[in-house]
Image (cartoon, rainbow, N blue to C red; front, side, top):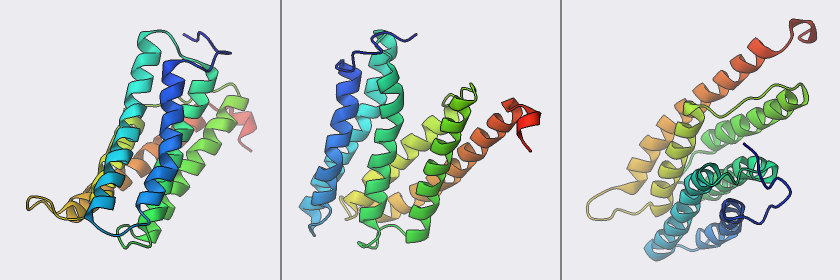
Length: 190
């Protein structure tokens, strides 16, 4: 149910905006070397990632779902994840090819969703898409932390989780394309 579709100043949308504002903060913190900068960067990234789950919950629970939120929420996620991936490449924490594959999938699905919307097809997020986002956020938090804490090697943990996130990211992307082509009229596919 959509309410307040013209009022974009509600709590869920403000949380989405906060996620976007957090992006340059994380980027600046990743420009500094050392455990403290990594710790603060991970803290800001994790808090921003948590707003993704909180804004959707609040929007549904209090019927504050809006067209603005439906557009900006997934965009904020993609911007946050993409910025973190890109910033972690020169630090040697994420392989460039992996960042390209993940960001490429995000762009492809975003384009597909725009095409689907133009054709009147709704490609709603599924459990794979939500799992993908959660895995990406957790993996990137660990990779931003990077340094070992209390004998826990966050770089190794984050790398393993990012591999898992990559598999789920690609699987969910394939699912979106399959759903689209099942619903897309055959006369339009040529």
